[in-house]
Every structure is written in structure tokens, then in C-alpha cells.
Amino acid sequence: MNIVNFTPISAFTGGVIIGLAVVVFFLLNGRLVGISGIASNALTETNKRFDNFLFLIGLIIGPILYTLFTKQQINVTISNSYILLIVAGLLVGLGTRISGGCTSGHGISGIGRFSLRSITATITFMIVGIITVYIKNLI
Amino acid sequence: MNKLASLVSGIIFGVGLVISEMINPAKVLGFLDLFGNWDPSLAFVMIGALVVSSPMFHLIKNNKKPVFAEKFDYSNNKNINSKLIIGSALFGAGWGLGGLCPGPAISSIALLNVYSIAFVISMFVGFYLVKVLNASASK
Figure 1 (cartoon, rainbow over the protein chains, first blue to last red):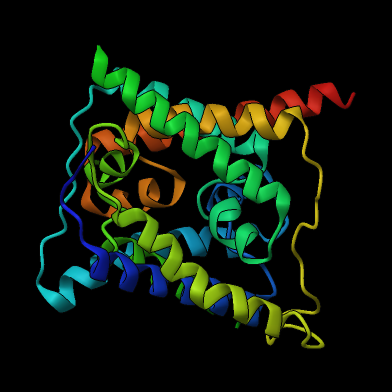
Figure 2 (figure 1 turned 30 degrees about the horizontal axis):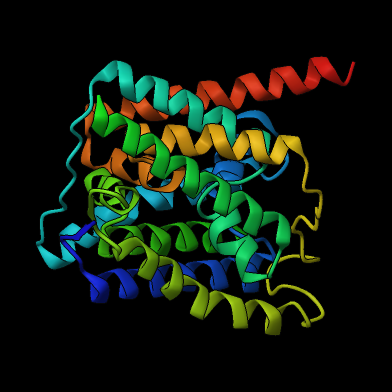
């Protein structure tokens, strides 16, 4: 194992801001952020559809405002093929709805309230993610 | 007001994803590359988010009600079952393949990256398939 590209300060700062978003949403609207749930409900449920939709719009506006105010470029490197990303997207869509949460819903909101269910989910998707990257690097 | 709160929460979350660089799949894949060139940054994103959200969650949940809603509304599901494990494993595989999870994928639509848009469309197909499967299973 080599440790590379380690940016603990920006990672922690960004994490605190993400935590703040979770707190604002909970304090004001009484809901815990889980993005796979918000996105999927915006698609399939009529209840609170507009709220969910606005949250997603916010997710997209966030990076745009960041670029406008800081004049900084946002780095996004995707070194995968379309086919791989379409398969990945499908797996993420299916998996998060079968397990009821993703990195935000289980990983932050769930672990934050000490849910054993969410801790189990997070450990599972991290281990499988690590194994997947390991195998992908072998091929 | 709860509509505005949803939008603002989404914006804050999106900015957090940019500053933490979770929006960058290369960064996420670096975190999952535990046995190769490991970038531990993402662990600090989670720590940062939890340091803020966890204590605030436990404080706020004792409030009578949220500021802009009638009641607190979050899942208290404690079931640790095969659906949780299988779903999380599928999600982990997709996460490891693409380096994108639902939040960063949706936020990166802002950058008009065709690859992440393909991922998002495929993810929504996955959400919809689970909805259809659940509906037919409950009939």
C-alpha cells in the first residue's frame, strides 16, 4: 500500500459542510438526507416530490455557485468507458434502493444516529467497493 | 419555506461535495484502492460530516418539531437482512466500477460531463426497476 494524493484538510472541511447540510435539512424539514432515497422518490413518489426535486436542483447548483464565487475549476476525472459507467449506474441504482441507502443515507445519516443497520450497510459497500477496485486493477 | 430549505440544503451539500473532492470519481477510486495507491482522504470526509451531524442529530431530535414541518420523518428500520447485504454489495460493486455514488453523480451534472450524465440516467433506471419489482412483489 502506498499513500498518495492525501488531502485531509479539504476532505475534512468538505465533510463538515456536508454534515452542515444534513443538520439544516433535519432541523428545518425534519428529514435525514439520503440522496438515493431523495432522487428515487423524486422519480417515483408524488409525496414531497417538489421538495425532493428542489434538493436535487440544489445539488447541481452548488458546484455552479462554487465556481462562480471562487473562480476555481472543479476537477472531475472519469477514466471509464460508457458501457462500464452504464453498468455501474444500474448497479448503484438497484443496490441503493434494495438496501435503502447510499453513502449519504447509510454512511452519514445512518451512522450519525448509531444505526447498526446502516453501519452494516456501510461496511458491506466499502468492502465490496475495495474488492471491485482490486479486481479491476488486476484485469 | 420548506421548499427553500430543501433547495438550500441541496446547495450546501453540493458545495461540500466539491470542496471535499468527492465529486471527483478519481478521488473516490483512490480511496477504494486500499491495496494499491491508497488515498485516505474520503475517510476524513465521513469523519468531518459525522462530527457535525451526529451530535446535532441527537440534540435536534428532542425538539418538539422541525422548524418548517409538522413532525420529524426518518426511517427507524432496524432490520439487518439479506436485502440490506445484497443491495449494499451491488451498490459497492457499482461504486467501485464507476467511482460515483448518487450525490456526486447528480452534482456533477453541473459540469455537463457526458459520462456522469450517462451514469445518472442508468442509475434512475435502476431506481425505477426496484420500484416496479417491489410493486409486483407486493401484489
